[in-house]
Image 1: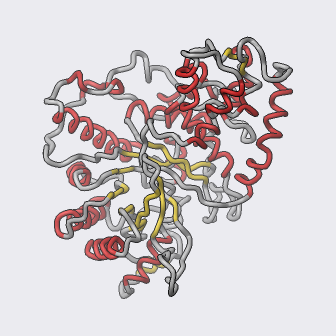
Image 2: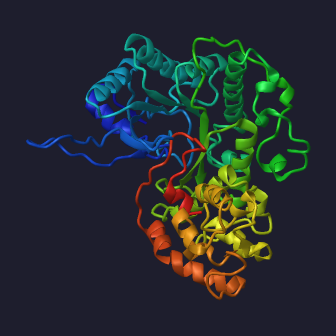
Image 3: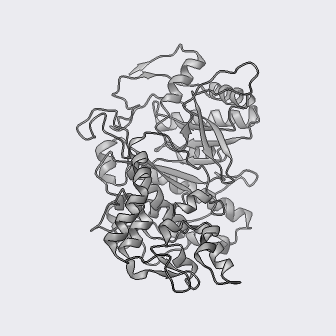
Length: 479
C-alpha cells in the first residue's frame, strides 16, 4: 500500500473523490467545464455529485473520502488493503477548506463524507468528528452533511458525530452474514447493526424529548409486531429482532438535533450469490426494525481479481439493480410485502418486467378492477396507477363516474393499466385475461427501456431524502 504524504490539496481531491465514486448514495457529475467569457457558470468534475431533495431540488454535494487507506481487505472494494493503489488522506482542516471554498463558489450545498479505516475505527471516526466540529463551530457551516459511520467505532464517537451530521449511514454491504464473512472477513454483522441501532435510539430519544417524554408519541414502528422475527426467514439469514423494551431516551442535548435526516444503508448486488428475495427481505427488515430512510442497491462493478468474485469486466447487473429499486418503492409506498413479491420458491425477479407488473400478471384472479368502486389499496396494485393517480381517482369519483378519458387526464398510464381495469363494467379494449398474452404485450412496451437500462452504463440520480408527499409524476407513471 503506497501512502503519499506530500500532495497538494487538488491532487488529494482528485484521488479521494475518485475513490468515493462507488458509493451510490449520490451520483458524480462526471463533467468538467471551464468558465467562458460572456457565459455564466462552470462545472468541476472532481468531488461534485448531485442528488434530489424531497422538494425536487437538485442538490450539489462535495463527495469525498477522508482517506482511502484501509486496514480491511474486503474483496469487493477498490480501496482494499491488498490493492496496489495510491493512498492519501485529508486532514480535518483540509476537509473544511475544501467544503467552504466549494460552497463560497456556489459549487455545492453540502458535504458527503465517507472514509476507509485508517489505523483503527476509533481513530478514523475521531478524525471525522474533528472535521465536522470545525465545520459547524469554527466555520459556522450550516449546510447539509451526510457522514458514513465506521463499523466498530465507539458509541461515544457515533453519538458525537450524530449531533453534527444531518444524515448518517452504515453500509450493510451484503445481505447475509455468510456473504459478509466470505468477502469482508474483517467486518461483522454485529459491528454494523449495533451503531445502526444506536442511531435509531438516538433519533427516537430526540423525538421523545421534544414531546416531553410521552411514550405514546412514538411512531407505530416502535411497537412490537407480534410474531415478527419468530421462525421467519430473517432469523436465519438476516437480522435478529431485539426486544423493543430496551428503547429508552439517551441523554441527548436538547438544543441540538440528532441525525435529523435519518439513516440509510447500502447493499451490493451481484458480488455474491444472494438472490433478490434475500435482498428484499433484508431491506424490509431494516425499514421495519431500524427505521431506515433508504436502502441503496449498488450493482457490483467487477474491478478486483478474486476467485470469490465475478471476473473483472463482467457487466454490472444494472437492470437487476433497477428492479430492486422498483420493488423497494413498492415496499415503502404501495403497501406490498417482500413475501408477496417473491418467495423461496421464486426468489428472483424477471428482470424484463417491473415487479408490480410481474405481481399483477401472477395474480390475475384479482383483476380486472372496477375503477369506480375499487378501494384505494387495490388501486395501488394496478400497473400504471401510482400513489398520486390513485388519490386523484378516489377524489374524482366522488362527484362523477369515471371513464378512460378521465383516467388519462388524471395521469394513469393506460397502455399498461388497461389490461387490469374496467370503467363502468367495460374494458378499454377486448383483452384476454391471460398470463402469457399480457406478459408478451407488456414486454413489447418495455423492450427499448430495458435495453437502455441493461446496456447503456449511465449514472442515475438518487434521492437523498424521503418524503411520502413528494412523488414525481414520472415515478408514479412507472408504477
